[in-house]
Image (tube, rainbow, N blue to C red; front, side, top):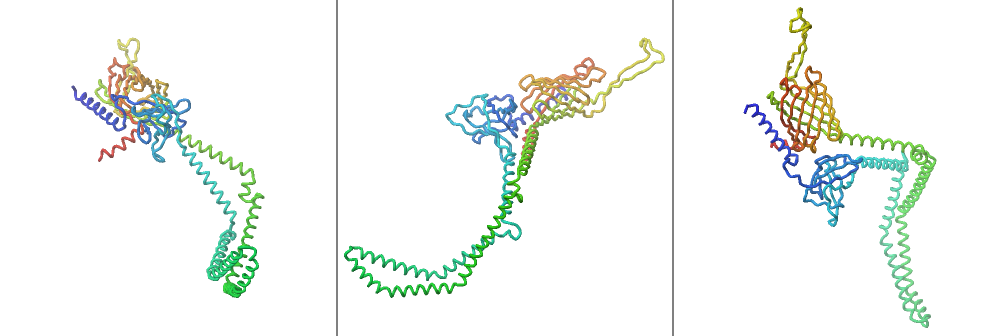
Amino acid sequence: MSSEAKVGLLIVGFFIIVGIFTFKIGGDRMPWDRDGGYRVHIFFDSISGLKTKSKVRYAGVEIGYVESIALEDGRAKVTIKLDPNIVIPANAKFVIGSSGLMGDKFIAISGGSAKSEPLKGEANVVGNAPVDMDQLLSSLNRISIDVGEITTALKTAIGTGDERNRLTVILENVQILSESLAKTATHNDQAFSETIENIRMISRDIRSLIHENSDNLDGTMQDMHLVARSLADTLPDITRDLERALSNLNDILETNKPEVDTTAKNVASASENLDRSMSGISKIVDKVDSGQGSIGKLINEDRFHENLNDALIEVKNTAGEVRSFIGRASDYRIYVGYRGEYLQDREDWKSYISMKIQPRPDKYYLFEIISQPEGSRKEEEFQYDFEQTPEFMGDSDTYRYTRTTWTTSDPVYSFQFAKIYHRLTVRGGLIENTGGFGLDMNLYDDMFWLSVDGWDFNRSTDPHFKLTGRLDVGDTFYLTGGWDDFMLRNDEQDSIFFGAGLKFEDKDLKYLLSFIPLMGN
């Protein structure tokens, strides 16, 4: 076996090991692994942020992943692959959750009763759309506007300038009045207590007298006589107590006369301030009712309402356009890949670095940088005129011939636009620095592809045609082989080739980048 073949086998083995390693990192199923589990199709009105391979959780436990996403009858059809040992009730709810405010999206399954029948494979269910963050922010914005209007109304009602502290003055006057009354009650607490005790004694004596003279009607006069005599005996004491109470009350009034006068003045001042405040409020209400000021215009003018309504409609339309643009941008899918092809007849490798941008499921753009092992082919046509025509030239004295040369092995570029029609993909654009086209046919469940490419149609010989077969071994690794430039097999320009490649989507690159620091440790 030649050294070049050994190197080729070593590189193919390396690609196989890298492909297996990539499957393990991304959590993909190996081609020889058994395809267990069952599928459920969920229909959502909106799946903003949800991607294939997103997790599926039931009661917080991961039980599967999103296998594919498609558009069907104006709704998003999400196919999930579930663990075969997990039983989901038919009345369970399917919603789109998020790991934090800006975290990755996943499908959350909740609810469902044990008595309900379990979901069967390939069942169709309807999911609940996630909360729209734009609507939430719009609601918060409307609330903040309402709070601002209320604050402005209160500011106008309280007043401006010297009138701004009306409520503060009224509250201070009420506080001064309450403090004065508290001081008066504290200073005269003893006198009030004695007066109340004397009144309590009088009440007790009257109750005793009534009780003693309530036995019968015959002793009423006698009882009245006894009462009169008792009153005569106790009246001097009662009189002295009353005199002492009146004297104490007079002393209280004399002692606290300044405080009582101040309290009366404060009450009168507070009443006057309250009257002025009520008058000011009445003027404000009259202005509002007559349509003066911002609040008056807001309440009375129809044009203000119409302008405000038009502005809110414009804001709503703008927000809808922004949401639509963000939704379209989030649907873009980007693939980055590399493949190497070993040209058997030329005993050399040809490398491709590619990037595919897919804005919609039915079209994509492909950009490639391609190495040229033997360099770029260049054909030059020459003409020679003979003064004397040789015999082998016949009647013509002009001899034309084409010389083929190979330039340096600088890389070439391809840029193609592709349109997908079910299983057939049509490509066109720039192929290896010249115009060309390509056809891709999906022969078996997105696993085996057959492609035909044609370019360099200005070549003096036949155009450059290439036949390629590709076998996808999972979502990341694939094998390729075919026949390059097969139209020039008689000129020995054709070559059988075989190779392998890797392709990564943006989410796959995130997995690999997150794993690189672990390898460094």
